[in-house]
Image (cartoon, rainbow, N blue to C red; front, side):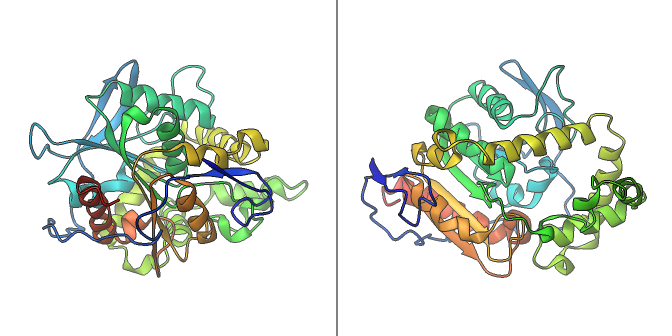
Length: 343
């Protein structure tokens, strides 16, 4: 590994290390597979869910049918406030290649948190590590947003568990104070003295559909292309999670845990973790991502030892939902290139 000085553009004030292995291809050279894929069917419901125990970790997961007894496994980790349903369409595109397992992290979806769970990034990472350690062999690991941050940490800590890594707008440190990063512009005022109580009451009065539409407008560059059946699925999921006794506290505590990870001192910064990832890695980012700036994309991909970057125009924070076919072809292209020794 070679050291990049604090003055270097990649460092942003933190001395970093980046891979010494020379790249055989440009950072943005991402082959798109021509392998046949299932027709994209946006009418399919979320994949069947079940409680699954791996090692000592029990999570609610959604699984795709196995294409063959010898097919590798792909595991999908959602972002902050999300769930396993965030991967429905991409899992469908890849269902002919892998056994798909999309998890609900503790406190999210249909996985209640165990007693004493603290919702820090370290604890979420340990949960995923222990879950993967109980599966047969290394997996193709996918993460979106906070799930991408967790997946980075998993791949750095336990390279033996990760066959390849796909990151969709991973929540790397991004401390821009921009109100457009909130689903509702009133949220920053919710804890302001004198007016906070009134704002919180107004937020509590939003209907599930209003809440779902706010998330769509925040996360997607073109929410108008989301079909009505997917919007209705989101509304039903909003109603369900609002009824879960654990959800609001899990969301608040995990948000704090994520921000704390961004504020970690230099020697524990996430930017020091990224160069430790040895797995072949694909970073996918939308140019219109309002939650985590696309300006973080080149730095993230370049610090990965085997990283490549795919930037998608007119796409927001969840490319796996807005552009599932393109993301699937890029993922398959990575796997094919790895098999040929060309990644």
